Length: 109
Ligand code: FES
Image (tube, rainbow, N blue to C red; front, side):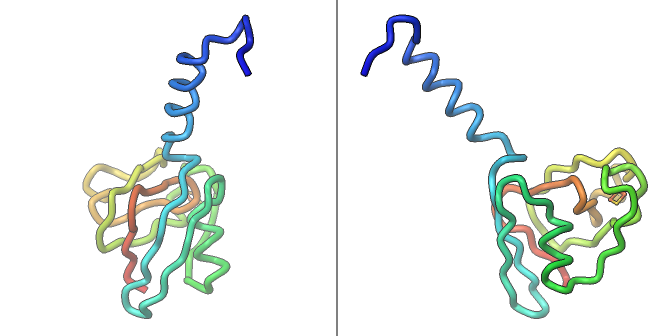
């Protein structure tokens, strides 16, 4: 169905760009020591997934500002969204209350 006021080409581009925003894409966590795989759904925080799985994390501000939830990782394409970790800390830690990943995030649990 074609609408006179909608440019279908632009609508398609907008949808594609929106769907690729990392904060709305899901991804997988692999807890390598226990060999468990968890799924972070779009709109869900890593912190919520880890807490539900019984992984020890200590939440604080829940907004990426305190570093209380800083968690080590083994590897992964992280999208850091905190405002508290230094660049060198981000090489080994991330804040699961706000940060996300693309692909599989490997954690030492
Ligand atoms: S709870 Fe404060 S940075 Fe995550």
